[in-house]
Image (cartoon, rainbow, N blue to C red):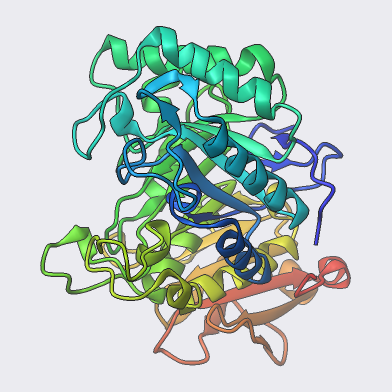
Length: 435
C-alpha cells in the first residue's frame, strides 16, 4: 500500500499522469458520489478497504452531494452549509470531511473531490437548490483550498454532471477555479461534464483545466474510443480520463423498466476501449455504490442491492486485472495502432483495439469477441517474440506455444481476450501481476 502520496502531475508528453518522481500513475477510479453525505466514518473505512483490495487508486466523491445534499444531513446529522450559504460552511460537516480525507491518505487512496454537484448552480434536473453565484463560488473554492491544500492526494473536479447553460454558470465555475488556485497551487484541476461531453468542449481555453474528463453515458457499446480520440486531438495536450462510464448493474440508457442492465462484460468493453485508445485512466462505477444505497434510502435506477453487497460485483473485481496488465507494461510509452490489424476492423462490430511501442517490441490487443486476430507484423519481429493470452475475467495467462505467426485464434469464442506480444527484451522486463 502506497501511503506516501505525492501530488500528481502531468507527464512529460502531456498525455499521462505521474507521481512527482516521474513514475506512471494509473488512474483507476471508483464512483462514490454519496460517500461523504451518506456514510459514517466506520462505513467509509469498510468501503475504502474494499477498493484498496481491488486495486483502485482514486475515489471520486462530492462535498455538496447530489441527493438532497444541502437539505438532508449527513450520517452524523450535520448539514454542510449554514442558511444554504456557501460562504458559511458548517464546521461539524467539514470536520467529518477532514476525517474522510485523512483516512483516504492513511489507506493509500487519492481523492477526486468535487466541491459541489451541478444542481447547486444549474438546477436543470435534480433537487438543488441553486446557491452559487460567481462571487460566493470564489469564496467557497478559496475556503476549500485553504483548508485542504496541505493534502497532496487530492484532485479537484469542478462541474458535477453539468454543461453550463449561460454565462453566469460559466463564471461560477471559472471563479471557483480561481478561488482554489489562489491557495492550492499543486493539486490538479479537471471538470466533470454530463454524458457525451468532454471538459475541453466547454473549458478548453481555460488555463486551469489540466485534465480532460468525459462521461460516456450509461449505455451498452458506447464506443468510448471515439471520444478519447477526439479529446487527444485537442490543443493544448491534456491527459484524458473517462470519468463516468456506464455503471455496473444500471439499466441500459437508464430505462425506467430497469431491464437490460449493464454487466461485467459491458464494464470491461468500456474500460479496455477507453484505455487502448490512449486514455490516462478509467473510472469504474456501480449503480448501488455511487448512491450508497441502503435499506433506509430511496433506490434510484432500480437499485436492488445494498452498497455493501454491490462492492463485490464481477466488474469491480476485474478492474484490478486491467490495472495489473497495464502496470506490467510500458503503457505510457505505447500508442494506439489501427494499422497493425490485417483486413477490415468493421466499425459496426465490437472493435478490436491495439497499443504498441514504436518498435513493436510490446503489443497489447483487446479482442471483444472470440475470433481470429490477424496482424501486420514482419518476420523479423515475429522471430524474436513470445505471445500470451490474458483472460480479462480472471487474469489467467496462457502462453502461446511455438513460434508466433501473424494469425492468432482466441482460446474460445465465448468471451473477450487480451493478446500480448513481447520481444525477448520486453519479456525479460515483464512482471505480471505487479503487487
